[in-house]
Image (cartoon, rainbow, N blue to C red; front, side, top):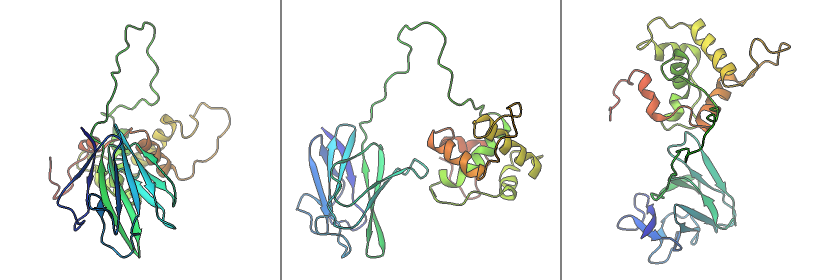
Length: 246
């Protein structure tokens, strides 16, 4: 049974999806073999790389001489790995991936799916005693979570390098669901989140503590890295005008 699906780019020289089973390999490049993925661009090496299926993940070999490839997680709000020139069989753990190839001034991409991801049960298996304390405790019904979600929204919507909204933009974004929101309240919630997520010491800590630079960036980076805010959480905000609700 296949374990990895490769989705060619538009005009990729193949009739549809390419499916490979565990242990099988798929070459890609400007002059790939008949059963490989052909990418007809002069900036792509004739033999650019190779994908190997390995159960619920896959391996990427970069066979180019000079180019670094990037594998993005489209659902990971900027999460990515880099595979440098000559690197063989780099493991890619994402269920949905986008391979980005730099090609003579262009960025070409194709998708790779690994749909056989398996997740174990979180049952305690009969263990007794106290539960493990959660790493981060966030109440999704509180105002601070709406502020955090609004901060993360641009990157959750598929723009991993988007600049973060300024406070005035946060106020306007939150007003439909929070009419009394103000600049000072948003600032207070950002400070509260920085303490709650342990990015700065609490008010009872000894000493004044260092000032946290890039507070918003640190909050968003932490929240997205550990899935504290997900795309599904955007429901706490009002729909964007013209947005198609699925």
